[in-house]
Length: 182
Image (cartoon, rainbow, N blue to C red; front, side, top):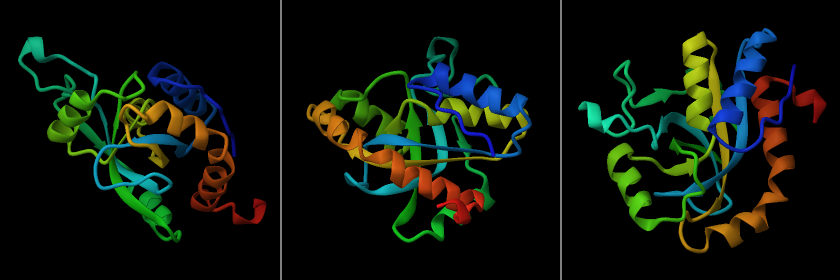
């Protein structure tokens, strides 16, 4: 088992995933905080059934917002990892969206909900999903909802940020089959 604290944002997350894959990782689990977009609430923990990069924009070339050259807009989670997560009490599935911004803009939030049908927004999951899909490595992101992705998001995020690591680390260990380390 190898753990990496990649840092915030899509570039850091993609680099961390690529590093883990180069070290021989046979699956990648990601944990962190997300803002609520739709039908999730502060303090809840969701396992991402799919991930979209909401800020990926090739619309000027005739594609939809978020659509990659390969034709997809969202990547599914690994079914086995998702099912393992859903066996843990209190975790439910949801659709994740990512972008290199702390989402506080109501108009962007509505656009991402309408376009991608996401439940939560973060800054890493979509990039990690893309790297893992390219390498054929199973992936799952588990996110704790820290804020409502609105004008109170920064304050709410800071309040939960210091509390999230222990909860999510334990959940990721259980999903990975390392309950004995808890």
